[in-house]
Length: 217
Length: 186
Image 1 (cartoon, rainbow over the protein chains, first blue to last red):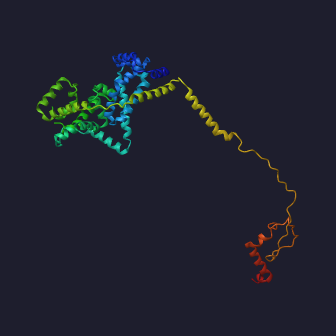
Image 2 (image 1 turned 180 degrees about the vertical axis):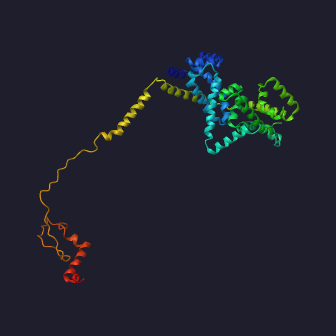
Image 3 (image 1 turned 90 degrees about the vertical axis):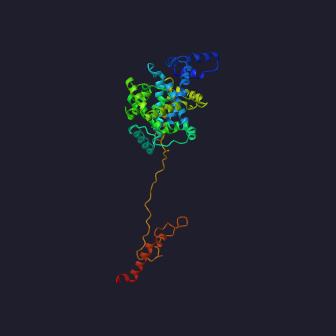
């Protein structure tokens, strides 16, 4: 089976009419059907899965870890793991949840590895603790900067606001706000219960609003 | 409803997961609270700005690199499923060779055994004349002179080596004292 799949990858030749038609047919299938086609030996089916999720996963991982090059590596690693373990995927579950779970775990590992420095680890733990235990409040204590500065730096400020969120809040926030995942999907991806997801999302939105409020009229 | 309650449950309201009665309470509170209205506006606009951010682009070599990694990952999968045992056999044979090299010195004798002829002593040691105790330095016992072939500088053990050693000086002085009678007087 492994040798047959290897041969299929080598023989892939884009550009022919038949190949193009096959690709178009694959685009009309659901994720489950594409997964089944891939398990049946269709190498183009796996390419279709890559095409569907590469950009979305890159956006998610990039917003989580903040490093574009490393995010690409992690997205590739995600697809490699999907390829290697596709035969063990439970097809009664959603494929997008599974692939996002793999990507989320890789992103979390990356963030954990970065915080190995004891001082960085302490600061991260403290920041996460404060984010979870500080009472939620809405107050705008800062004065508003001038309009020109605000408009010019608003996008950068929004990006920076996401990066400033504590890690476990950031993942939930990005999955909800940028990927449009439901609470149940986010709970499956992150391995948390529904209440924890809601709590973290609420705090993330509160932190986010506190940071960008001075920039918004 | 208080502002704290509103902020604490804002996500349920925004995402439409709050019960109908709770939603009405939220909206009633918003009508009378400017701060909470601003909060909703900030979160909504921030979310819109986030969605409008440009997405990071994949590099041009993303797909070729991914295919390369999958190609090699396929080889690793093949090994795990037992499709080819060649790499395992190679590793095993190398381990056997290295073990043999490591144990070779213990199995092979280090150096050839060379048998030398035994040393046979068939004559007793030569009876050398003893040096008299009162002999002065420089006085050597009379003995048959050695021929040039037989004699040598170090052949006479009671000769020159003793003659110029500190011991000879000490014994020579003692002998001199004995002859002159000074030692008895002391």
